[in-house]
Image 1: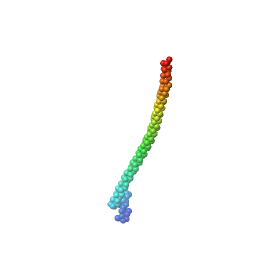
Image 2: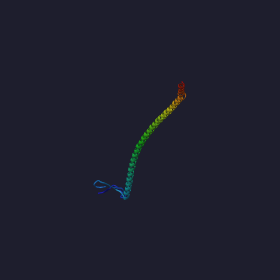
Image 3: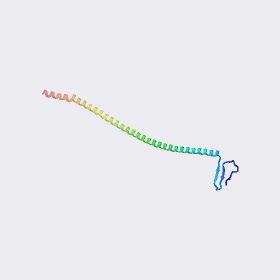
Image 4: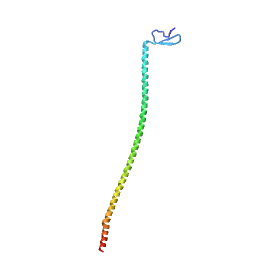
Length: 141
């Protein structure tokens, strides 16, 4: 019924061929324990590899998220810079307008002082003496 292909009785693994043409391989307990240890070790390696793969995938996603965040921050930074430049321009315009108004007011004050001086001069040296002279002449006649 069972045919042994191995000639020596104590050499393992033994390959046994059954009558129904099925092949059976026999191993010693030590060999089976060694295979089990190797199987467990390979299983742990595969699990570790799968964990590493998922960590790599997760890290790629984190990198993509950080890149998107960086792009957003760069865009916001450029908007802030443009806003600051716009505010600087507005402040410069306001400053120039303020200086212009201030200069206009100073020029107006100078003009008013000149007019007051002219009026005072005119009144003091021309109008009052002429009026006094005319009044004196009229009173004398």
